[in-house]
Amino acid sequence: MRDLSVYFCKKCGFYSYYPLAKYAVCPRCDLDMALLPIEYKEFVNLNCYERDELLADQMIASSSSVVRRIIAPHKINNTREIIAILTYKIDELNTENVKLQGTVDWMHQFIWQLVKRSKNITPP
Ligand SMILES: [Zn+2]
Image (cartoon, helix red, strand yellow):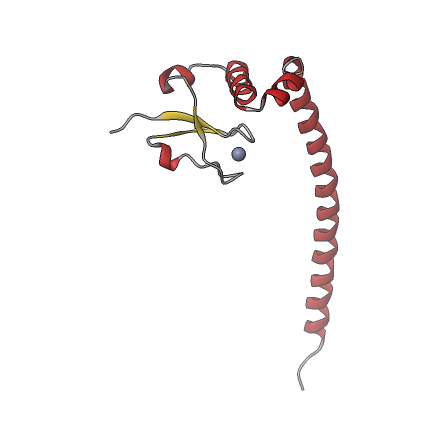
C-alpha cells in the first residue's frame, strides 16, 4: 500500500491525507492542494497548535510577497482571530437555530390542527 502524504489548500487551509497528488483536491474550494513538506507520520504527531503554525507558515509562504508582508506580523494573532470568527459564527447559528425551532413548533401545531380537523369531518 502506498504511503499517505499531507496536502493542504493554499486558499482556505483545509488539509487532508492522500496517497497520490491527483486525489488532493480541496472539497471546499475545488482547487488542487499542495504537498506539505512534512512526513505523514510526523504530521499526525503534531498537536493542533503545531499544525496551525505549520499550515499558517505554508499559507503565508505561498502567498504573494505583498500579502506576506501585510499578514506576517498579524500571524501571531491568528489563533485568537479564528476563535473570534468561530464564536461569532456560533452565535449566528444559535440565533438561526432558535428561529428554525420556532418555525418547526408552529408547523407541528398547524399540522396537528389539520389532522384533528380532518378527523372531525366524517365522510357521508
Ligand atoms: Zn480550500
